[in-house]
Image (tube, rainbow over all chains, first blue to last red; front, side, top):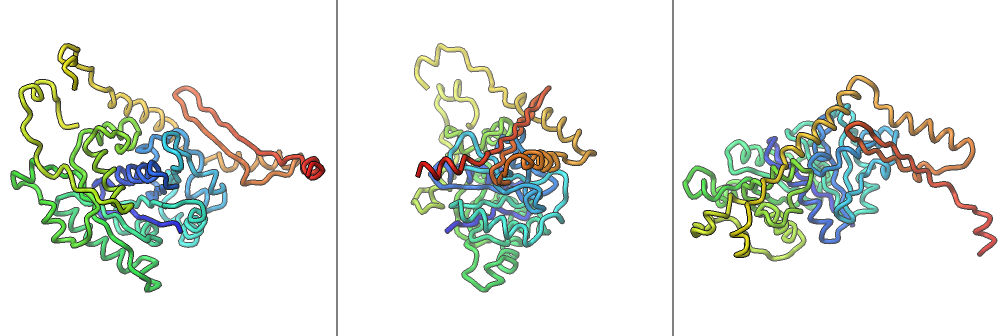
Length: 273
Length: 93
């Protein structure tokens, strides 16, 4: 049975698309047939982060309107087997997404995939509601920062009341916290909310902490999901999160300030990878 | 880092920013062109299919449209899977 995972946050710019791309890639790397859908109709970006922007022919709206078949709109990833991308439309607006249309697409994908990842747009409007409606699980991407934590709390409430599972009074959507852009140096200085603070406030299970890392920008520059960069701390942290999601027990890493480098390291080590 | 790296010149910084610029220039050039005009691909596909369907029976699900946008040139590749020779198969069975 396919699982629908919605990656959401309320607030924009916290790393939903980066996380969706990394997570989908990670699941496929571990042998799960995975499709990741961009729900940000009008402002698509998942294609860029996945590096497939030049290969987009059809999009989710073409499928909904019947202009293209679902399998024609799916873009097969060339790096990882079993990974597919369904892009959003760049030219239409969010009203083009319909309840039945999205439902049919999810239903059809569920026959063929293990995981369906929905990359939600920011906000709590229509696009975000479509993205979370079918969720079995939700990954709430949060930055250790007041507005992001507040918006995450808001979106958690929306998931609890507006999802299909809530409507049908089934077992609630399983929620996971993914804390991104975490900077242990600033946490130690007392300038940034600690992991424990965020967990205490949001009170949902922790999936992982992704450290602030230069490799995330490099990854988006080149269109390679950061999880493919297994030398970077962010890439490793995403790989850990995927493993935990699949039931493995992995300790949290990158929560503490790295030990001071020796002379050699300081001369040649460069900055955090 | 092996001790030999000590003697090697530092690697030049990976040029990921210039990669970003190149990718953006290509994709934005394409998006700006199609901003005013209608997206012609669905219609093109439909019409092509109609032409092919005049001669052979094709399953719309067996049509793949691939596009590769490039700087000076884009390639549009349309793959139509034609039905096999059903009678031959049956006689072989």
